[in-house]
Image (cartoon, rainbow, N blue to C red; front, top):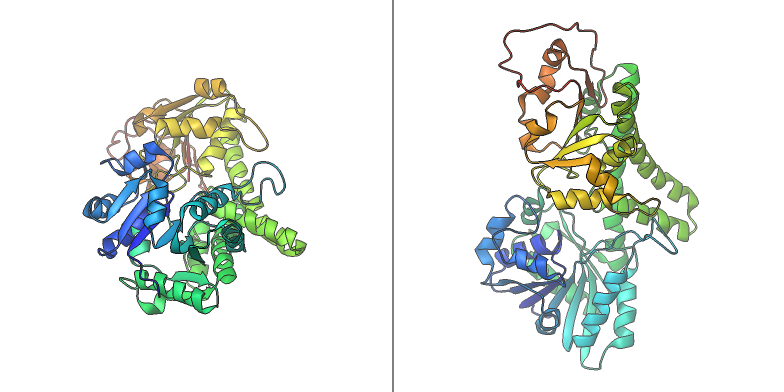
Length: 477
């Protein structure tokens, strides 16, 4: 069995950075080097202002950076010296060509494989950490077989991540499971054991699952598809609740107490976002289509369509509440990241809602404590496979603010998309204050529940529980 003393991770993003920081902390005898072509990103990892926000990450990095954890742009040197190489690069959905809008774009995976083959000598264990389609490991092997020197021996493993942004450090230190897939040959099993020995520094053996490579790759796609399915399921019920008078939170609690169902991922929202769910479900749809399983493909496609429906439905409710026009009206949008405790905006529902409102001519004032203004403007002007967005129009209609009260001042509507603590701590957005808000003239809307709107306007003298800077209307998630 290969003894792993040096690890190289290609890709210093949301997966590679936190994962290898925890490995370095838990395995002090192992030298871990995280490399990336992006010099600004590596510079940030070596500073006191990390390129990503994740609770507890700064403390982990500070404990071992410069000791056995290093961040570098010298990719070739790190690969040469490593016993084990993680591939943790982006695998976005293709925006052109065959499989456009569904298939994963593996150009970065291929580039990594070719670079590893070009500079490596000796024995290497190469580990897929990125989310990849089934049989991607076979593609990596083919590249190695076609390009390697006689002095290079390799094994390819699949070790998908199951992190949730906002709790990534907790998930890494106390995982539900660690999944390792590899060849069923003696050499493949030795490679699996080498990687297993790294995780056994802190993960109980009972939580480390080993499979063949294909099962490991499919398990990652299936896990994210099942989680996305639950969100779309409860969001579909939220629409039904709004027209029947049921309360989706009460319904979710009632069905969540059934042990066969459980309570996780049953919170109605404006739709799922993040780097994985939509990408992985679409990848699964494409895989089923290619393998001539159209019924299965249509089933999983519905998960995406319900998510899109929920975003459009929410946006339409905002417009409907404002007399079916938002042109030149100020709308405060609180929260732009796809979930709380992260600055990640990838596939955030806030992007789609903002675009819908901008198409109607709304003036958006956006607040998010974790997302930089440049990132928000980039997301709103980034072209999509189906449309382009005029930067001049976005710049004219969008204002980024650093104070939520400033965003809400004189707004026609307040749209709450992300439950950051700095947003939920604002007194007047609490569910328990809906009646008081209506008493002073607000219209309150919420997902999955009817809020009684038949409360007559009442002037109240004591507004100590309600902030003085009140907008005219409010849409609440």
